[in-house]
Length: 277
Image (tube, rainbow, N blue to C red; front, top):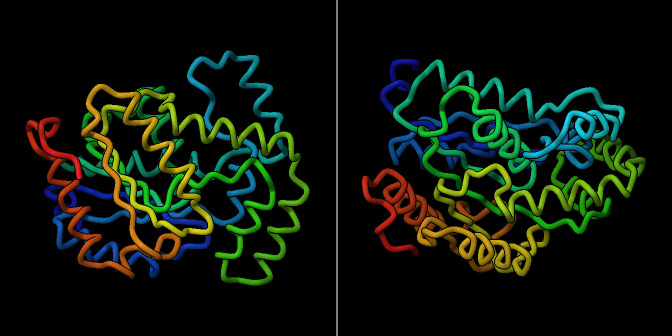
């Protein structure tokens, strides 16, 4: 397994809220056909409560501000941060030729925030040049900085007792902190605050996803293209009437085609001159 990982590129599959490894087997099989070894990483449903009120420090955060940020809630540390560190340590050990990250919904985005922060702000692990692409699948989702948005996402947690407990705990979150964190989360992805903008991005989404509002997401995509000099690095594809994080199941051939073309672009020596879909 390790020998295979060393010779093949890696894709990190950052699962959605309530996701289980079995839910990602279609993606694992697809990436195997495309020549990639999959690493599945899924933060627990409980971790989303922390992520709703706190995330990585902003690039220019001072020590006093970081101390204030640590007091936003009574949870000691971020599970997403620990997963990000362990994942990057694992990739560093394997030393693949390159890797990509495939991000599902906001739970995957919370992990991506920490990976991006560690790679491009803290400059840890010297893996920046090995990250060649990011794929946002039904992500990011604009949740208006309201607890109601989290409650809708928690419906994807299969265990009813766990889901009811999380909804109960979510209602105890400070709404001002949730709103503040939402703005930081959305603007951080919209403006690429950690400087990972040279890494090509592919956005896969649906026209009627109840969790990922298409209007907000398309505005973010348009903004990303305006922000960078090489607009062909921002790719997107909108599916018709496919469910949240369910595009591969609804459109297997079309989905694999677009992901395959994107990966070819990312690995091309002169990729910036290739056409955008």
